[in-house]
Length: 140
Ligand SMILES: [Zn+2]
Image (cartoon, rainbow, N blue to C red; front, side, top):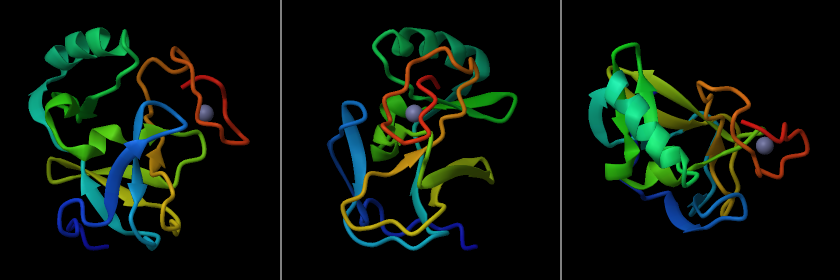
C-alpha cells in the first residue's frame, strides 16, 4: 500500500451530513485501499488532548485523535478530515504511519458517498451514535 495522499482534498468535499453536522463525501469513485486524506491538526500531548476532548465533546465534536501513547492531534485546527463522521459500518479506517494519521478506504466507495470510520473512542459506549447503519450500536 502506498501511503501517500492524493492531491489534497481532490477526491473529497465537505457537505452537510445526515449523520451529524458536516460530513466528508467522495467526489468520485474511490477504490478500496486508497489513502484518502491525512487527519491533520495541532500536535499536542495526550494530557492536553484529554482536556480539549472533554470540552469539545460537550458540543458533540470529536477532534482529538490519539497518536500513540504520548501524543495526540487536535483536528479542530486542521483540515477537512476532522469532518469525517463515525459509523458502526464504516467505509474507511485510520492508520498511523510515521507519526501521521491517514484515512484509508476499506471498500470501494461510490461517488457522493459519505466517508466514515470507526472512531474507536476511548470511553466506549459513552456517546450516542446516529450513523444509521443497520448494525448501529446506538452508542460509540
Ligand atoms: Zn452507529
